[in-house]
Image 1 (cartoon, one colour):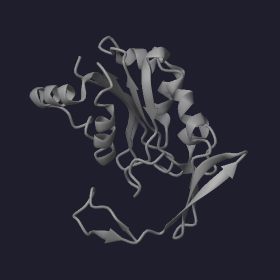
Image 2 (cartoon, one colour):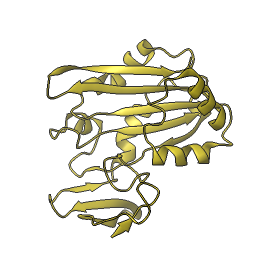
Image 3 (cartoon, helix red, strand yellow):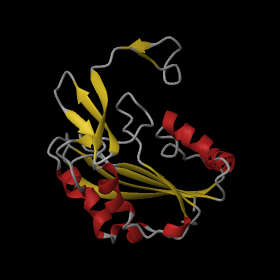
Length: 212
């Protein structure tokens, strides 16, 4: 039984149908999650390799990257833990073409000291690895956050752990300015794919700049 007062009302409890274990391969530890109800197994064995195929292809100054976080998807219980993939998914191609919709989503947060005000949609969509996201069978998202300094980084990470959509929901200019000032953010870019399996909305790549 887990109690998560930071996410729900104090005292809220739930029973989880998931077993968590440590998987050791060649001396390195990974997280393994077994769903007792569905019999599915997810792990972090290939997480970094899958996501680095994207991050390494981005037009970013690698020397200015402060941190890269690969958080577990918000639809699961353990907010903030490292993202897991079905054990069959071993590379980016597997993740993008996995036949169970939304079962292999890619979520990445990149914190950088680089100013991204000049970044355009074309700059991202012209990258073959990034452009492949639009045909993914899962909803994927990469959030790149430019910081003036990292003195509030720990607080920002905590904020995004509790509310994974806090950057996405920024819209009002005055609130955005206040939010950016509090966490020392210069600008941010969200790169994601978009589609709808119900009304057959065509797949597309979306690049959204939060403040120029």
